[in-house]
Image 1 (cartoon, rainbow, N blue to C red):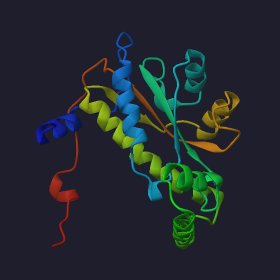
Image 2 (image 1 turned 90 degrees about the vertical axis):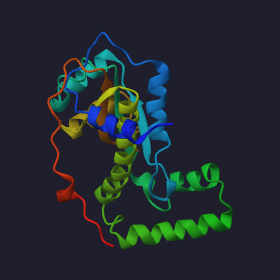
Image 3 (image 1 turned 60 degrees about the vertical axis):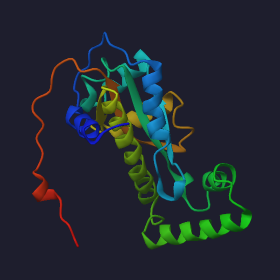
Image 4 (image 1 turned 30 degrees about the horizontal axis):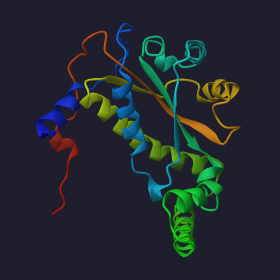
Length: 219
C-alpha cells in the first residue's frame, strides 16, 4: 500500500525536467501505467474529451521542435512524448460523441440519456460554454489538465520524470499535427503536451509558497 510519505515523496521528486538521459527508456509496462492514469482520469459529466497521441517518430519530433520553444531540450531526449488532444465541437451537448459516451460507454437507457443531455445542455448554456467555438474548446481543454496531472503524478510514483509543455506556437504545432493526420480532420485540437523520461541532471531545490499562504479553512 502506498503510504502518505510515498505520496509526498513523489511530489518532492517531480520537477519540470528540461533535458532527459537519452540512454534510458521507460519500459512498456511502466508507460502503460502512465497512459492508464490518463485514461482513467475524471472528466466533466464523464464525457472524456481527450486523445493521447504518443509521438515517438524522430522526424515528427524534429518538426515540432522548430515551433515549440518550450521543448527544445525535451523533444530530442524524452523517452516518450505525448500530445494531449481535445475534441472541439464534439463536446456540444447534442454531439455524436456525447451520444456515443452515454449510449455505448456509460450504457444509459434512452430515458436517462435524454435527462443527462438536458442537464448537460443547461450546464453549458448557463456557463457560457456554447457562446463561441473557443469557449467550448477551452472548456474541454480544462478537462485534459486533470489527465495531465494524474499522468505526471503516476510517473513520479514510478520514479519517472516529466515536463508539461505549452511553450510554442500552438497554431503552428497544430498545423504540423494536422499534416501528419493526427487531428482527425479538425475534430481535435491541441490541449497540452508532456514529455517523460529520466533526468539527466539533478534539479535545484523545489520552491513553493508556504502552506499558510495558500491553504485556508472554512469551518
